[in-house]
Image (tube, rainbow, N blue to C red; front, side, top):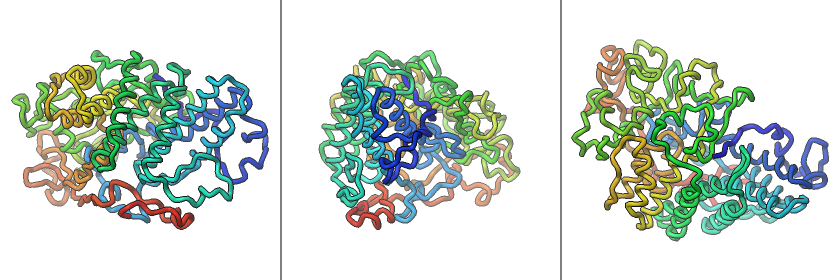
Length: 546
């Protein structure tokens, strides 16, 4: 298990503000071809900056106010009931206001700068290629982030001169872009060592990232009818199996699910493949505690749709299980259910919740904190850090969990129709032991079973939106968003609410968002290229549908 420390002391030295005359200036504090790339130390220092540039926005972000990527990215999905959904979630983003925007190529340029100069270092091939592998893995991650948004992309494989034809090139087809990405991933898996010092990639981290990308690409191609899905799904299965066969990781049923997400130090945790380190001693902080327990109420809570996907302890969906006690109160609703449910959402007199659950819209005002849906998120809550000042939390952020690797392996094999009961026992059922849920048995509905398992295991870790996109299930984002069944047992000041004014309820008495959601199947699986970029390069083609 390795982790990323979000700041490196050398970061201020390099890669900041790289511009067209970068190689023409030789100040003592800036890296250039003429006085750098001579030793292993030079290669390592340069790559430290590449790590920092990419991973700065990963994890919980640094002092990110109400943005904590791992935790808050699910706000774009049907897992969350948002107080104030943004344009992406509402389906009303536009070419002028795209919501997501990743048309910045500065990190790719910095990586290409390294790749063009690494051969100058006086080091053995295995050493040089290790650092090249680090850079190429980061380039693959950066590129695939863009593929998910735009599909076709320009392939920029060199540092561009002012008159380079690539400056005005159009996009290359997705197939060619994926070959480019896969070459980088394969090089990384081949040349990275099986173990590495803290903060750096190793072979199994690279394999886990490859498995994640290959699964996304394979399923996207299958359900969007792009073709070649089998090749990518096979690679997802192989890469995830490589991690599983390493024996470096395990699921520990003696450690509660929730403990993984309130940990000040994930170093050495065998359920974690890669994580982002936050340190009080280095003033590396984030704001997760305040996001969860803000005095004006959390901006989001869980959705009824997500809650319903947690199985009963007998392994059956709640509509089929005799163990399910109904949802007249949250205590009944959570009884005899997957243990992950109570470790993701709180009930009265648990975590930071008092005798009642406060809704953000409480006409009498909330005490401590509240939720818009009635399902108060507690995942990533650490009691010792709750009273800390704004932007002063430092629990670590998991970036790749071993559980995800197991789910990738199971899903890829299920999609390939090669999955066996032994595969299920070595993946999904390892997670179910920790969750207290009966084993999954291979059946004709295995793909849906694995998708449900993935949803609850990875809830509020930033995966659900991408999952819906790759499965071509964006229509789920257009459905009404429900919360808890309104009742005076659970909800503080229930008698004070005026229905229709203070709270919106549907005909069955469930809290319902008063927002109108939409999803345009013709375009919302991608995002528009920023219009200013189209003006700068008239050969670029706008994303289809936009």
